Amino acid sequence: MASYQSIAPVLCMLALLFYGGNALHHDSVLKTTLYIKQSFAKDQRTLGDGTVIINWPIKDGPGAAANTIGHAEGLTTLANEPSHFWVTIMDMVFDRGSHAGSSLQVMGLHGSKKDLPQSQWSVMGGTGQLTMARGIIKYNITQEDSSSRTFELYIYVYYTTILAFGDTRGNP
Image (tube, rainbow, N blue to C red; front, side, top):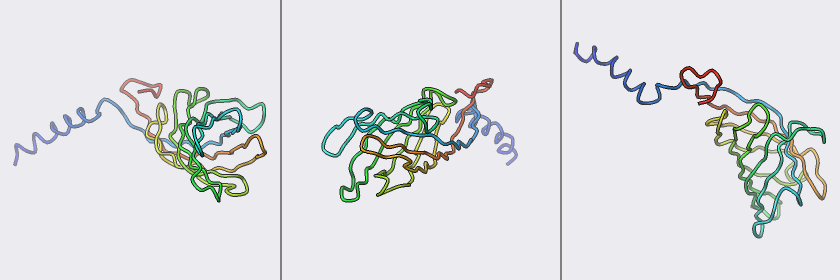
């Protein structure tokens, strides 16, 4: 019995070193509002019947003077034609702003303002500063006409920042 008690701390230290003892993990929360401008003719192209490849700009504000800080890149497929619901699978890739070099993996339904004026998308992962993100994006369609649609996104996600020992910048 005494020999087990003396070796247990050594085994714990070895396990810590083997399973990530060289990094510190910190859970953080991202709460922010962003905007996606969906231009039907400019920022997407039809792949096949009912499937569209998207590259929608992500903006830091609603107006024309807002900065583009990334793109929502992926696919959207017409899932329910009578209801005009589309299933969207996308990466929100940030190339400017405080989360430059990071991304969020997002999936969910969207439709027209009259059919689905507000809804939610699931956040199922992230990269960069937003490693292992999980949460939701609630959105409203704030503008819609025959050529474009604007989504106002309320992002609420948990993510894990991985800091290597001695790294004060928050990068792995």
